[in-house]
Length: 386
Image (cartoon, rainbow, N blue to C red; front, side, top):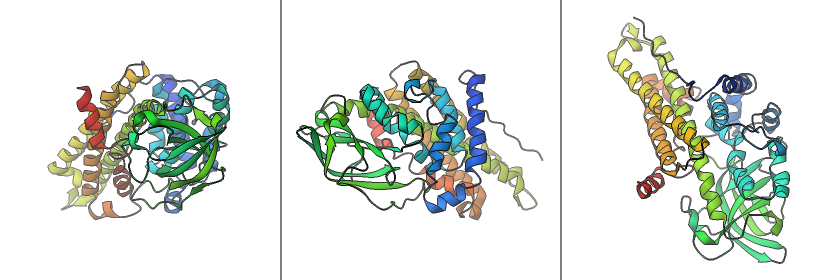
């Protein structure tokens, strides 16, 4: 009995031949530079720093960024194509670590001066420095307006005291785009500073041990009377909250892409395994219960991917998609929850074993409905905009 369910990843109304060339380059990079070593990097809970330079040298880090700072201007679907192919490494942690600049640099570009962009953007896109974003604190994650890390003006410096946690690339970041409190309580007292890791009083924890995303280093970062030059302030004092919110729209879109690709990889693995694995004298795909499970998985992947692309197209056209991107993230995470669960179920005991891709995908998947704004926060945002 033959079982075949074809899926489409490259929708021509969104991706052109030029996008496909970039996708092909990213795919070759993953095949040559990542897949042979990803298991080792997962166990080491980090990947070699040289990967930033390698990715930069073939233009992957700079896709969509201004040419004057070392980037390659491109529409949003170039970034999506690269992100999808990097996810074929099978490691959400690697993708999050390599791409930490994609949430750290946008506030600098939108709020910073030309001098700040040259200092803090160009070296990152060149692969020479690593950038991270510092928003979450031990006392709160999604409650951004309640940030407690203090930055008190003292002459031509801010004196920063506090702590950030769950910082992707935090262990080895050279610079942190950091939310601090410079004013009164609430959203209107928050500013954004770029804090360099060699600043006296800046210290980093050991790697935090996580359920998933092993290949990315994650840390707590402490500030003990860090003296940060006022020239590192992004935009106007007490206006940082708006930069954070604008940044979230893109971050949530990319998390939806990660969720869709996590689900797609799990589905593809389940499809392959169901044809090879035999039970009671026939392949698992020979049983209606398996076929129907795979159909449900494929449907979720296709619907979620199409909706995410549609939202991305509107964002790329300059339309406000705060409600829709929150919906896309929630739906993609729901779909990925279901698909990774069912993929492990199809694999049975092997799906629970280290060394099998679906086991890692199931672990990596769990953070997606938490990071970038938890599902519950997304629902609050959606409800206010309905």
